[in-house]
Image (cartoon, rainbow, N blue to C red; front, top):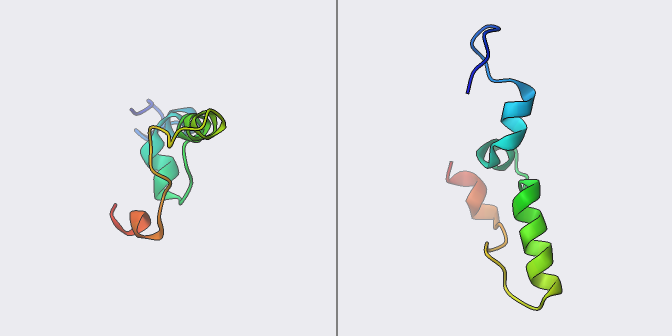
Length: 58
């Protein structure tokens, strides 16, 4: 996951990685979409909603 330029990941690569979103206190768009679809369909969804404690675990 790195580019030839300085050996750092590109912005596009970082956007695709759900961990990078989580590190910044956000939910990855694909996970958010799944939560919305599940809620609209009356289910709990594939993922529990984030809690405050989630952001202290990594």
